[in-house]
Image (cartoon, rainbow, N blue to C red; front, side):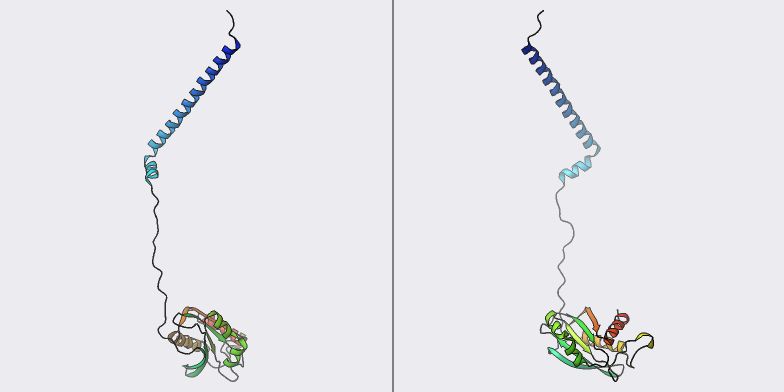
Length: 209
């Protein structure tokens, strides 16, 4: 018998390779289908949810609360000196309102002068009225009592200076301002210079409520 010529051998080799390749493809398809069927049988609910799920919005939407406005608005703008009675004493304060003051509550800043000073001198010295006009806040300069003017701030181990109850004065002053002026009670700040700075510290500790 004569051996097959080279072209015949080449055709037979190609045919065998095609048969083997086709068999591998069919085997792979069968394996993939088997895995898919098993997965569906094991987790039908999960697959059902995934196939039918549609995007939805969650959470709640609410209308923002209306802005709080004031009904009692003093007519004066700029500086005004006002007196109240606290612990039986006449107490004075200088109130500065910016040109933007109106029915919308503004922050309140109380600024205590230093030892042996006055509200007029300190208002000019601090130049804080200019900042109040720029930022739009209510600025108050309380006047200390005694001679020379002082604050019941407490100085080290020597105890409070002066005879007045300046914590009560500050409390009464806040009540007066909140009742008669359009101030934001959530934005009340105190500051001061020298002994007035010590008074601001004491107010922060004593009236933190």
